[in-house]
Length: 109
Image (cartoon, rainbow, N blue to C red):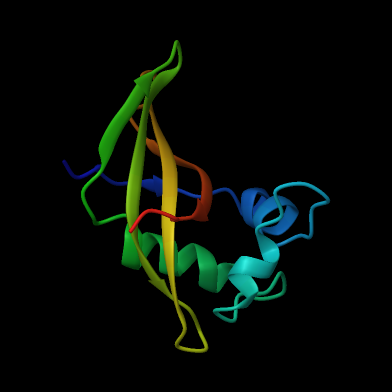
């Protein structure tokens, strides 16, 4: 199934989590391989919206706040490198908006 617009991606999710080095479960080095940087966070947001959000989503669980979905796909970064990723989204019951939760490397082949 396809998630419906709008695709809400909080800047802080990218700048303060995914693109910022973390001592545990760091994703910034993974994203850096495709040319994504903290200074260019908007490119990552745009690429997630344009390259990943339109793909099929699978329901992974229901929560008291909304349904959680995963979307798997390839993200082509600014330097042309491709990353296989899993993105997690929540469609909130209250607003019916799809909110980006996180992204991590897709290790399934």
